[in-house]
Amino acid sequence: MANDSMLKFVGREQSYPAKRTADERQEDFREIAQRYAVEPAEEQAGRCSQCGVPYCSVHCPLHNHIPDWLRLTAEGRLREAYELSNATSTMPEICGRICPQDRLCEGNCVIEFTGHGAVTIGSVEKFITDTAWENGWVEPLVPGRSRGQSVGVIGAGPAGLTAAEYLRGHGYDVHVYDRYDRAGGLLTYGIPGFKLEKPIVMRRVERLKTAGIVFHEGFAVGHDASLDDLRQRHDAVLIATGVYKSRAMDLPGGGSNGVVAALDFLVASNRKGFGDAVPAFDDGSLNAEGKDVVVIGGGDTAMDCVRTAIRQGAKSVKCLYRRDRANMPGSQREVANAEEEGVEFVWLSGPQSFDGGDTVSSVKVRKMRLGAPDASGRRAPEPDPAGDYSVNADLVIKALGFDAEDLPTLFATPELGVSRWGTVLVDGKTLMTSLDGVFAAGDIVRGASLVVWAIRDGRDVAATMHKWLKTKAANAKVAA
Image 1 (cartoon, rainbow, N blue to C red):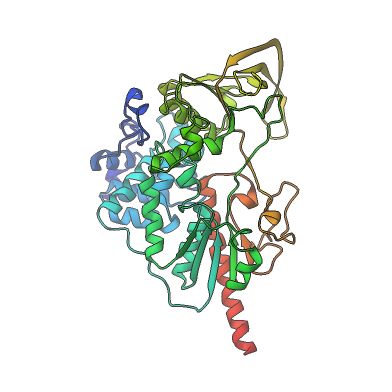
Image 2: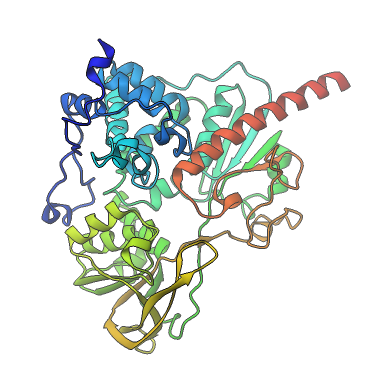
């Protein structure tokens, strides 16, 4: 019976899909883990305790029906498992690959607290949807009955793509504008292939294009058209550009050659993976090959940078982080993967200057220690009297996070309201900005966050826009 396949967490050990060896991983940008075969996937899904209050779902930003599709998987009902997984997420196979499950669903799994090891939720999610693609269960997006209204979406990242999908399903004509020459945002150009191979993103984009969503790639709002121009073209506009401005680090030598922003480094690497001409990579500026590399930061972007540098053939790769391992914001799994691949983590270390003149040759580092908790509750780093030291560096990558760009100036729309942090101000209920009919979602509202949050925001704002557009159409009909 159904319950016979569940509650196996006591006698069945946790088992993730096998990873390729570190030596193999260093040679390419393919994903590092294999995929479950059917039997192991069903067995691991069967470890779920089916608890009454599923903390995994509570701590998932999308509130995915995790225990339910785990049960269906354990019972061998894979198509039903996919359909349920797909009901709350437009990109379940992408979330299964790149969500930090150790901080979200798996990190809050009830059986993890009992010492038996969390259910391998992300790996099962990836298995379910990859199986669905292979078997033709991922159906085309069918547009709803035409409403005679159009929506412009600025930004082809996860928030914009999600909103575009839902709005097209409601019958709106949808146009997506993006400054890059390929859709996907950071899914395409920011996240390395060893975490998310690019054909997986491209097939999602192609599904949207086939449904009649029009993509204007290489289109810079503020240059090719102003925000006001788009407001004239469409009945509503969604701003979902993400945050791309690297957080500043005002230190001596910060302008030296060889001190680069994380996103510049990652975009160049991903473009090379597509076979593009990338002059800054080809001339060595954004190429780690043969260099002593120092990455500054402790988040997921820093982990992407150190592991990319390894694959580019760096001579050495060090990651400097001002707190200790237990207090870093990045995924602990990513740290473990990086260490396996040869990255050296230098904990409790903060950069003081970039030395070497016009071209960096070393980083002066100050030892740190953890003091009293700061406003976030984390122990604040403070200088350690033990002193300073230097590490060799031919390439320094700054991975301190991202801030919002100056969108009012970028879009030539000074009346667009923003917060003191530069994020776009929206009404908490309508998700509309200070401009009538212009909505916003994703990182530009909340500040830099996770892909899964962007997908959730895209879903939520699409529902809000749908209600507003229906009201607008009804009012226009009455006025006529």
